[in-house]
Image (cartoon, rainbow, N blue to C red; front, side):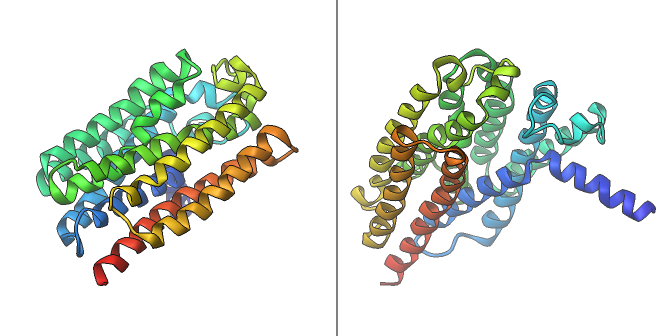
Length: 295
């Protein structure tokens, strides 16, 4: 019984970290590490950089749940989180978030480089502090402005390997930054009533669902242009471009249907595809990078 109880507690701490979100963050950070060098990144930077970034991202996710616990309790998507159900206390959650956050910062500072440690810390503050505490409750543009924090991981990965912020890393940042609004607004359309009930000024709540559909379409068009930048700047080759244009075409098809031919369930299918889309874009970047290097 004690062992089962410990496993359950570990699972609750694991859920406090928003593992699926952190996995996507870590994936894009790792891709940034590999794209930063022509060969393989140094093992030390790859190992400790990944661990440090993951710990800080998990800490930010935990702080987000600490701050948003009352909002989470009013939404079906989040009402089962550990702080809402009471399986973890506030004290336990705060201690956990603080410890893993400090550990992540220390690892990055001591075993990677100070630039990565500082940038990752600013990202944590941007997401857990500025976005969660203020922007989320203050403006329907919350996800646009706050998206900067979510777009940072490839830059952090790049800095972990090279000790600098390169223009190519900023292109990776731009891709995620522009991807975030259509990704999240598709979810917000589906959960519009829940956000309204929780008094969160998401775009579908403040400007209506049809206006939000238009914004999803416009941002998806812009995203198509931004995802061509790696090819246009010589960062990636034809393999990347061909695969990306296919992914873009599918995303645009979802956005067009969402705007002019919406059907029940389509917003969540668009949201689900957007995650596959981003993983596909970064996988293509990685594969193309090593195909070109091999040639």
